[in-house]
Image (cartoon, rainbow, N blue to C red; front, side, top):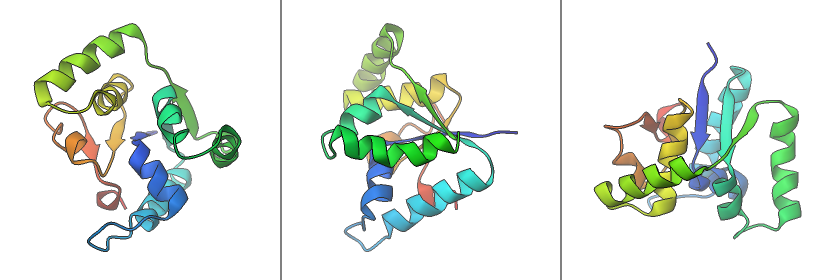
Length: 140
């Protein structure tokens, strides 16, 4: 059965920038291993217009297109979209769990699309009681 993963923006940045955590965890290597595993297993990575918006703060539009093209060509990358209902649900989650609105939106998008939310974000890891959420290193 094909699994779906929704990678939070931090995981994308770990992957592209080969980042290391303050405590020395090799976040970039973990993200790369996870994406290789997803490709090997013929699973799907979901991303959203919100992910693009957040990544465009760090990369130019051309850089982002270049980065995503390889995964799009492998047909493992599928785009999902925010809609008004998602926005309403996101505000509810934001208020209930006291997390940033964008994090709440990522959680709702993952849940609505029956995907595992993959993140390093402590805000999102608090949502384990309402959706499937995991760190990349726990999946490799």
